[in-house]
Length: 323
Image 1 (cartoon, one colour):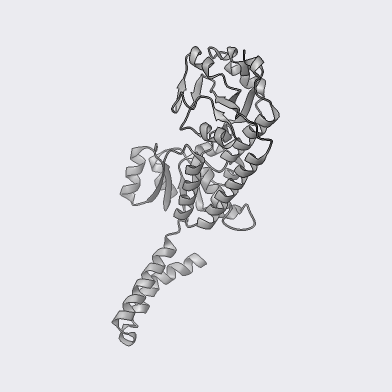
Image 2 (tube, rainbow, N blue to C red):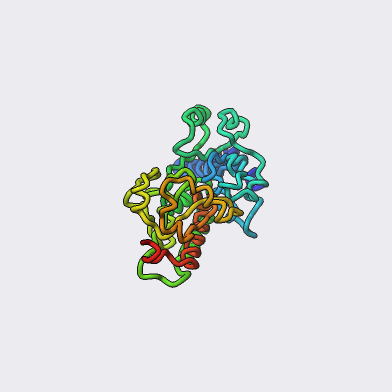
């Protein structure tokens, strides 16, 4: 009803203001015409059919919209999402599988899907296919481009920008405030040690996460040092010698919420040199769900909290064990 009234104002407001020009003067009529035009366009600027093309935007948008009205989470607000990415249902990487079940559309990267969903705003990423971007431009459909995000501050900034774009700045501010509170709480838990423990994130194929990665940001927020920060920029496989020189206090691996440490450890055995690490021999292996380790969204705070908790409950490798 409100949207219908706003549209009616936009259609009918201009002639009504023009008819007043004879009595109020051309200058006042001009001001009223401008206000009527601005009001109508402002009302229509709030996107009502949003298509999210990436998992990161899926998680950001659901968080913002769920915080946009009371009682929270406000499920009815999710109706503005006509589609989310197909990865929203992937339990290995998605933190919103339950919320996504109430959203009908799924975007698989097909340009023709954009036409069928009839969005008034599409959220894309820097890696989105060029043909999709050009098609949106030709159709004059508004888009919001997300860049690569490898820091918590960048995630918070993007949430605010996205909130502004969908006309939910207050809800986005709430999400960011809650993120900051969660991170502050995580940093307060446990006694601070004199030396920060070093942590190494390693994938099943031996790839290491260095600086300019989400894991680097997670480890810093958890009060730890990424052992590969100075050696690796981005992601890289290392020689056995380089891996042994890192000598982390803990090894961090991804998994599913139900994955055990033994199951994930078994997948790493084939990595050359890993069995010679003191952290491996001492069983200092921390498993955090991939959905949280890779969360370019408010859900990244879960990984920070879990890493902090694990570091608190498991003492690092001692000097004797490292020899």
